[in-house]
Image 1: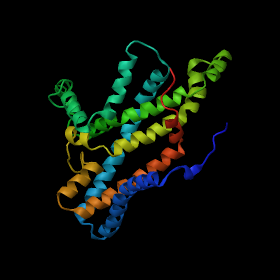
Image 2: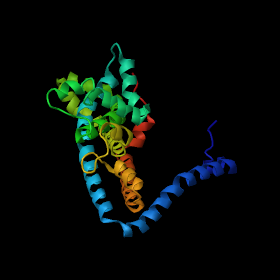
Image 3: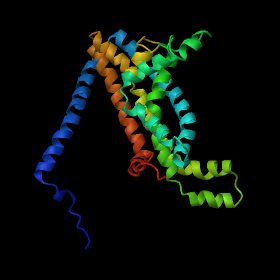
Image 4: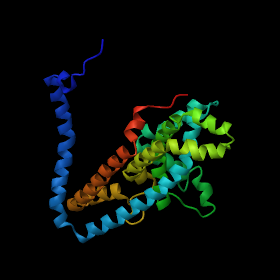
Length: 275
């Protein structure tokens, strides 16, 4: 017997009330911030405007570099996880997910212990005159560490969705593995890669905890937008903090639109790859 689609009528008043309360809880603070930011923009100080300019420039530059690194290194890893079967695969799978659930402050401490001046790797680099901690490079590394898993997981799902019969047919017709990958696999998996890139960039743009622990909060050097908001609010400059928060809110909305346009919601619906 076919199941009747009752639409919205199947939900009772209690369900609608609970859903409405949560929607209001999410919407009211954002609306309040937009209203206050519109009023505060008229009282923006010169120092606040300069902080905004420096922070947004640094954020855009560092996240752009971080995304290049994430895509170049994350695409092969996503392909291996989607197609490979090898000892230790579950361990690698868990390692990729770990930065997602790890508190950002802990991630920052871990990066500092590894690449700081006295870190496991950092002390060796220091002998060669290379200092990473509390520099723009540290900002990029923190963003890559935190955001890479979002790209890898979405890209992995994209590769898993590719019909292998198409790849086999191309191989049977004489196409080399590289040609099969570039002409069949990669174009078909591109929506997943694009969605993952959008999510990873959003996460990198909003990164705070790992950055402040590993890179510090130095204006014009390591102070990204989230750190600048924290600094201006701590200095009592609520107008600048509100305006910068509004800028990030607008960017976040644009990211969500981009995520939908790249088919990210459909990619999420399929879950993880079949193995």
